[in-house]
Length: 192
Ligand code: HEM
Image (cartoon, rainbow, N blue to C red; front, side, top):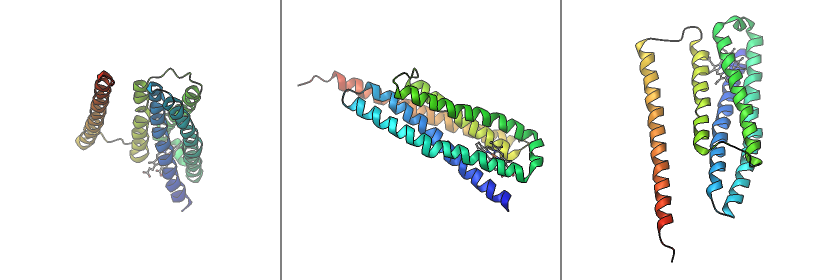
């Protein structure tokens, strides 16, 4: 019974953790883009994003990580034989990468607050894809364990996911280009 409780809150924990990680980098993108605004909008927006990032990091993202790890420790102490499973070793490798990413986000947050961030909004958009890949790999390992499927259905699902991600990216790119075109047109309108 304890095992099921640990597993339930392990899942709750990582859902919260990932929600925080995805939204945090999205806020970084808006924060960087606020630089293009004129004053006083620029300062107001940057201050607001700084507050939102700090709260999101400390109230949602970090507690999500702590709950995930604590519940995982609970799972492993209930079923210690799992520690010998190869899938868990690979999963732990990805979790270490994920924790590194989490801490790197904290560093970026501090750099943004100090006006020292070197990342552009396009690069941050790319960075925001990293946790998606880790999420898919970690969940696949947790569910399929030592027997990751390689049959035609598995490849079909994989292809579908790739197609979905590519469509979303193309749509986002088109929206960005339309927005840039519109602001270029607006700036060419003569002021009366
Ligand atoms: C400290 C790092 C982690 C450890 C040690 C760990 C360990 C475990 C263990 C022992 C289980 C139970 C497996 C079973 O009942 O067969 C489990 C389940 C699960 N974990 Fe993790 N985990 C960690 C982090 C994560 C993260 C970051 C995610 C999500 C990205 C995740 C996703 C899952 C899922 C979806 C399950 C349920 C699998 C199922 O019942 O089929 N875990 N984890």
